[in-house]
Amino acid sequence: MELKKKYKILLKEEVISEDIPKLPKNIKLRIQKTIEQKISTSPELFGKPLRSPLHYYKKIRVGDYRIIFKIKNKTECIILGIRHRKDIYSETEKRS
Image 1 (spheres, rainbow, N blue to C red):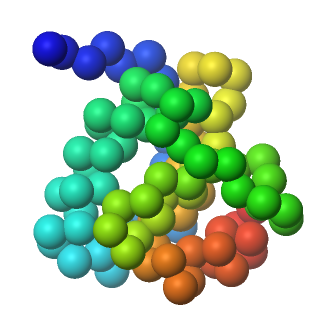
Image 2 (cartoon, rainbow, N blue to C red):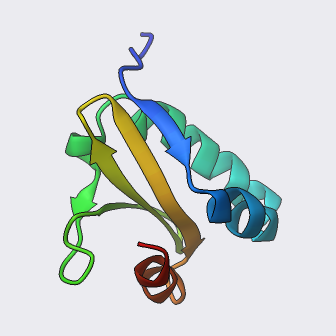
Image 3 (cartoon, rainbow, N blue to C red):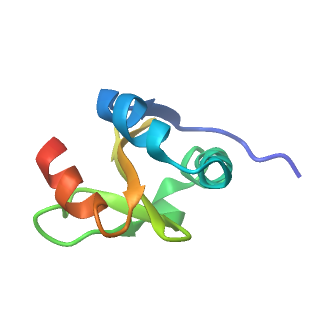
């Protein structure tokens, strides 16, 4: 069964320069798979809403790591952060 991609994935500059290089290799692969299979196909189904002050964003859990993203125009998902659960919420709040 092939999954239909309907959302374009955009990464904030900080995700590319700061978050991804710090991830362990095995987590990078799991996160890539999650983005391809869940966020790019049905982010509204798989993403759980966050509470204030990040109530406009959603999260997906990948082990002890979280992917924080926002659905934009029902065609794009902007990934704001990919970090360990202890750091992600405070760091994303600074970026938003």
